[in-house]
Amino acid sequence: MRLWSIDGNSQRLDGGAMFGNVPRALWGQWLPPDEAHRVPLACRALLARDLAGRTVLFETGIGAFFEPRMRERFGVVEERHRLLDSLAEAGLGHEDIDVVVLSHLHFDHAGGLLAPWREGAAPALLFPNARFLVGAAHWQRALDPHPRDRASFIPELAPLLRDSGRLELVEGAHSATLGEAVRFHYSDGHTPGLMLSEIVAPGGGVVFCADLIPGRPWVHLPVTMGYDRWPERLIDEKQAFLDDMLARGVRLFFTHDPGCAMARLARDPRGKYLAVDPLERLVDWPLAA
Image (cartoon, rainbow, N blue to C red; front, top):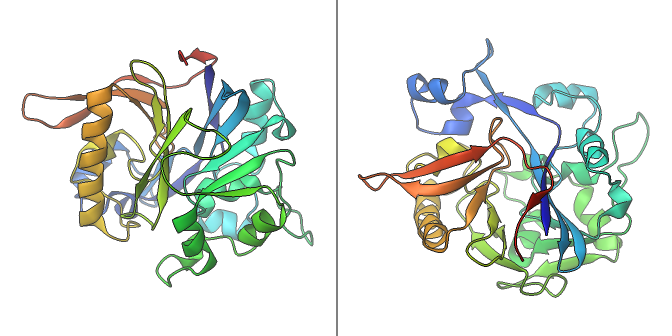
């Protein structure tokens, strides 16, 4: 099996929102803000080739579906659909993807499923040959969002996925499509039914941390986002998750860290979790199946 980190469109979002109750004097050292107090964020996907005999993409980033005014509001940097360009650099088109796994359907994780915005054109689904895997519990949230996070969902996306005939709602640790090659973990602290995908491998695989742990600063237990619906529960979930990953030697893959795609997990003498041996990019990176 071989892995690639696939860059999607990047963002700049308010640092206070991204770091919750962390003081600016501290988070400003982790991710220096611009003059508008926004910090740089990646929207990174993970590509796995020959995973259960398939080409699998974990998430699609924010994409380029926003019209210009909304693109500016949400700090999307590039106008082009960067994910498609990054797939091309890996020798693939979106038509070559067999499976797209989505941790959740917030627009910065699932917007890349859609074709780039064109004036007057209705949203259109890309990846015509892919099966779409979404957690069953989160699917219900997407169909009926709470006012707190309604703006995080793309109203047209759920009907497009449903009508594709290629949607699989996942319950439990494994899916029908990927079998035991991928183990799913769940979290409710950020959004109900957030699905974390672990590519299983002898001696420790790789887990897509999604918004449970968006990047290296959030490995530290007390650090949460203002976007999290239930921060205290998220911290408890994160501790159990990190204990499990550390015990089994599973590497962490980060979607929003602008400078690190993947890292190993460690603990210092005081018991603080650390992300060590960071890799900025994965290009044809081998993982023993």
